[in-house]
Image 1 (tube, rainbow, N blue to C red):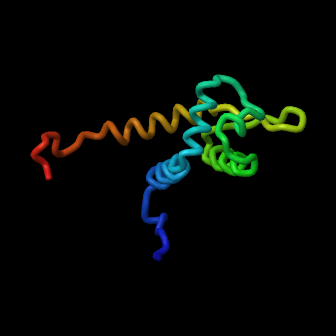
Image 2: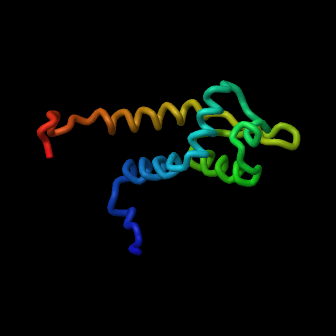
Image 3: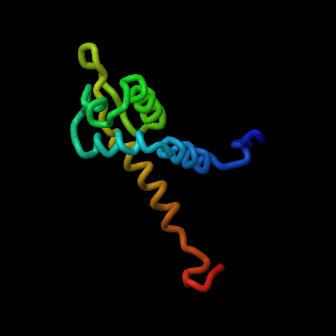
Length: 111
């Protein structure tokens, strides 16, 4: 298996690929959906809501936090998580621009 030559791609392309990779796991999508739906910081409800073990949830939260989707605050002995609104809007804008590019062939006869 070859090594990915990320340096030959733009910073934007590398960032989009990193974000897409983080979104590539259904547990992370489920966690994000739950945080969006809750509209508040969540401390301990995720294990019961998602149905995965605490260490697994923690690993997914770490990946989401590293990618900037969520942020966490320490409250007592637990960490509470919520959507990072600024980063969320930035990611949304980046992907909207990507998907809003004009396609060269818009009819059904293409390829």
